[in-house]
Image (cartoon, one colour):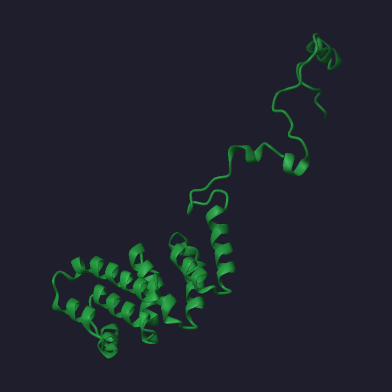
Length: 200
């Protein structure tokens, strides 16, 4: 499948998703059909434009390599809706803007947005950016940290008791067996007391 076919498939997916949001608006058909990048660029700066219109304009400009879409696409990459993130990442990957890796890394490593780091990290790997490795490591450290509420991941139950990986064979949790008469000998040693001597 060539790049044009993939782009057409992504555009069709975007159109299907946003058609319901547009609710039959004439602007929807215009933004989908126009080949004028100036028309699309104006949508990004005009006040009062709905989100679906800005998303169509940013996506089409990004896929066309028009860097005026950069800021809008980064905002969409940070959106709560995963489908908007997917479309934004697709357009940013084709925009070929040198600012993209740094912006994606900033989103991926934001400690307040760890739950939304998946698509920025995927974008970094798609771009083969050098920022991908530290961003991925930092994100995984937060997700896999013991007791992390973000990922809900916990160490296995055996982690705390089996120390064979660091200190040799694990010690048995069972108490050692005691020979008959052990309690009597212990009490005689401490003067018949069941507890040890009190040191004053």
